[in-house]
Length: 187
Image (cartoon, rainbow, N blue to C red; front, top):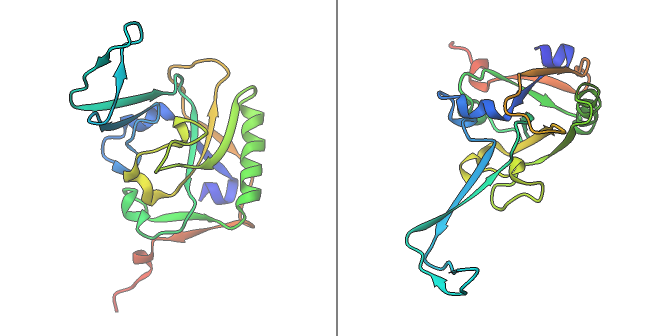
């Protein structure tokens, strides 16, 4: 309700997601992206000798972001199944004017996070995002259809504290929707 009435939003450090043990929807490592592919068709050549190096097993590609950063994650699509995906959810905030919402989030975040780099975009699930690993996620999270805000600090930071931004009431551009099953009555 504070998000709707006061425009209060929690900026979550990317490092915090790996610590959520009971919530599969928010448990991925937001600081490192790994992909595994079969080594069967890979060709690795020694840089000095030019000789081919045999590959045994799968190949793991690792992309590290290198600093903690802030996120604000939303879904870009209504799906009542997301209530099950996000443990303990009983309502959601539906934003009817995403453009105004995004402008306000960036305006107030920039006031608070001076000299940080902020961007928002949809998450890429099938291919690597051109925006880097912060905007790429494993396929298993595809149902979330995530729209992400991310703010990277001007210098490397190991661990950020949780932070909040306040963008003012968004009652004119958003509403709270109760979980559909919660609306049914026994009669």
